[in-house]
Amino acid sequence: MTRLDDLERPGAAEPRALPPPPAEARPAKPARDARVDVVRGLALLTIFIDHIPRNAPALLTLHNFGFSDAAEIFVLLAGYSSMIAYGGLFRRAGIRTALTRIAKRCLRIYLFQAGLLLATLVIVRIWMDLTGLTPRFGVAPLLQMGLLPGLLRGLALNALPNYLDILPLYIILLALFPLVYLGIARGMWGALALSATLWLAANVDHQLNLPNAAAVDDGWYFNPFAWQFLFVIGACLAVAVRNGGGYLPRIPVLTVAAACFLAFSFFQAGSWGEWGLPDLRPLAMDQPDKGHVAPLRLVNIVALAYLLFSTPAIRALSETPFLRAAEACGKHSLEIFAAGCLAALIGRILYRTFEPLWWLQILVNASGLALMLGDMPLVDAALIDRLAESFEQAALKPAAVVPVHGGRRGNPVLLNLRLLGVEIASLGGDRGAGPLLAGRSDVIEIDGDPSTALDIDTRDALAQAEDHFARLASLRQRSEQ
Image (cartoon, rainbow, N blue to C red):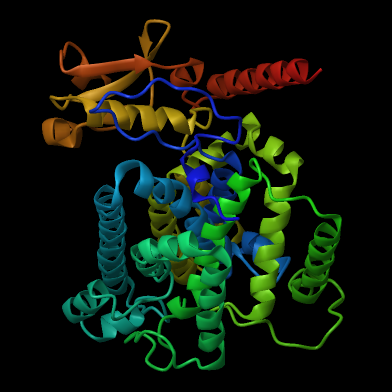
């Protein structure tokens, strides 16, 4: 039986008696699943690498080892996270609050899409003027319409260029989540059947799509009528995992079947030629269509999801300090995705201008990953939430919210751009915002931990980080003995 009420529980442990919250208190947020954030973070890093053609590291990303790739992971986990974030909210806070939160999130995603589109058009236009070169794909169709007309059609989601076409899909799917939730509440299997029917129709008739002026013959590359099925599967998966105490049932037959299919997928979809190895594909067949989530791709991602959420060892691995940076990326996926898009754009421009020389590939990939991962990988993603919550709950908005440990202010710092924007813009070189906050009374301090004082940009800081990881590993081993 589908138990949506379980989504309101903060975790998979047994329920505890809690004191009633005050009237003004916010609805409690469910505890996050590290597996979801880690896998989503790794998928975002993979998307950055894959979005640069002729990029050597792209030979080692997920699409080389099976039918599906990071895009399927992103959408599946979007459905999973939407159910966790908004499913219980409908009951805890009411329909109006839940719809408002969803609308705000959709608007935020749209603003990121608009900003990325504008930045991409401007950067590519400047590159064209400086080099005399023209883009072969990406925003090329929009620029051919004219800068302003192309921008307007892109903002209307009527012309979606390559590499900037997954956020519009996310906007539509999230906007439809209330209907998905209602369908699952009435009956999970019925909702899945209806969604599967729509997916099948989109695979049979490729004309069932939304128009795309940047690809007139094909419509949206990520056909929303097909990709919605992955989103719905993810939402149902969230319910099943919560009902199972944090795991899917570990059924030997399903485990063996999933593993066997993934093994077949590896041999059939492996990039044997690009790897310089003999072709080990057992069948002569084309790769399954990505734009409509062809059946083989669908089975591949479902098999991966089953093993991910039914294997305790994977959950334990996702909670190790080694993957905390990836977890932070997954927890702040929208910002990380945007950073990856811009880094990949610069990479594509550099490769096109100078050719993908080995040293340039190292520079592009190392710089992009460093930008996305940041230089403070030990900072817990939960700290970011506490910074934001402290800022939002303040009656008078502070100039900044700062973590403090051992009497010292650390990082990261949440800054109020309305109060400090001009001063921040005037900073130069490697100066931080510390001098701007010195002596101010409108700064909120919250409890931090040793990681907030560790900024890895020197060899000494790297050595401290290694010692920190070693101590954490030692403590974990002792607790398990």
